Length: 91
Image 1 (cartoon, rainbow, N blue to C red):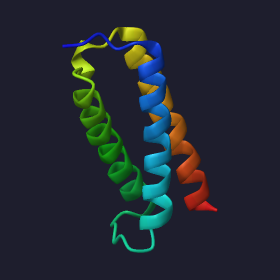
Image 2: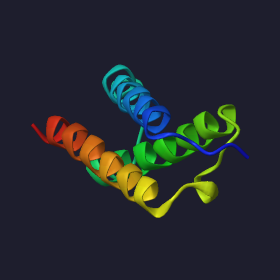
Image 3: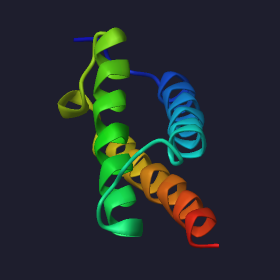
């Protein structure tokens, strides 16, 4: 496994934010999610996690091999991204 740099992690998180935003904006009209905002949140959380792990694997890394500070940064970014999307969904 490769040690991920802060820059590489920032690039991944930036890409992920765009990807999840695009998924939410482009797909909401076509997705049949049960549970309203909570269903949307769970779907986007799962997509975030899946896409994150795939991006890390492409860099020869894994969430399990990251430092705790990097994991915390990912958690914060995930929370911020989902909160922004859910605010737009609720408006």
